[in-house]
Image 1 (cartoon, one colour):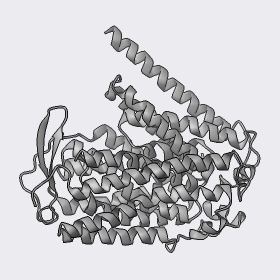
Image 2 (image 1 turned 180 degrees about the vertical axis):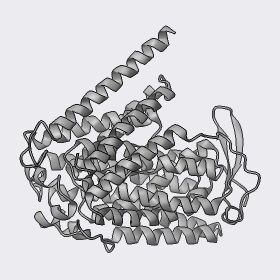
Image 3 (image 1 turned 60 degrees about the vertical axis):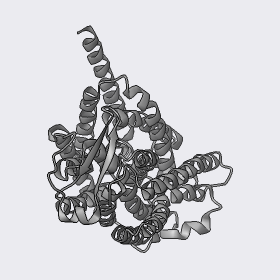
Length: 137
Length: 323
């Protein structure tokens, strides 16, 4: 394949990345204001966070009775868990872009890159799934 | 000569201010409080003050990162873990999200300009992101003081790399290796400074992939981002032009840090009071830093960054030893 300054797949990736990132950042600011102004009450009161933030995340989850993984979805009505939405968008942007670019590679018959992108999606989904856990310390 | 003297004075003033700020944080976070749980339940500083200080610090870091040509994560993690009362788990998660945000913001522009290259990034990202998951899991499983000591040592190694590593604007690559040829890793970009089209290709791709295993593990374990390691491997080892290396490295972080960030998020290490002020602070700092960049001398700022990292590295190491 002849080298291009920026391939169609690359431009598509850039556009998608830009849009989703802007949405994520805008939402992050709005949701943080909701949280900090107390419009939605937090699950863990802010003054209590002070007691947890110098201890491990494992200890924090146990003390605040928070389950690991995607259980935050059930607590979305709380201000602190609402922030997971924009953070999830920012952390999920790459996965969406990769899904999009797979089709571009398919269209361009670039099968090796398509397979690499598909394996990357599996890796990112595995990380995002919450199934991969470390022992607490 | 007069300008040089004034410039040195300004630099020294900035260094003194940064050192004073670090010393003050150190004292407020530990000895001055006289508390076994500094910044915790026994802290005399209210939670909002820590959040405000974090915001101010990350704003300054955002400026320094742009001027020093480094990612935010590599400054954020050692400084915040060394001088703030937050546990390393929360700092690493925030550090990854800081590095990720910077990469996500810069990515579209770099890809559109053809500076960051998707073909070059894809195989490296796959290796690095897989390794960063392993690194994150290791980092969460190991005792905190061990990770803190290793973080200190890593930061000091980064300082050495920053001092010793040379850069090559257009490395000579006589012939692409077989893997690079198979993956079609080559390209053209227009260098704005010379207005010339630069044709580039890479070699030693399998060795480069091996290095990205180590880079990924370190990125995940310490939440550092990894631009400090990506660029030398892409530029000096694989032979990508410097601008392509820097841009592709930045774009790579958006993938490598995503996978590690998910592990920390799913482990409950995402504290909104730490993450959000850090992200907003560093983004605002970056925006302020870009116009300043045009009026400053990068070499001098680089010395400041090296000085700050050296200080933070020693602090992280000592904190790990309980000193």
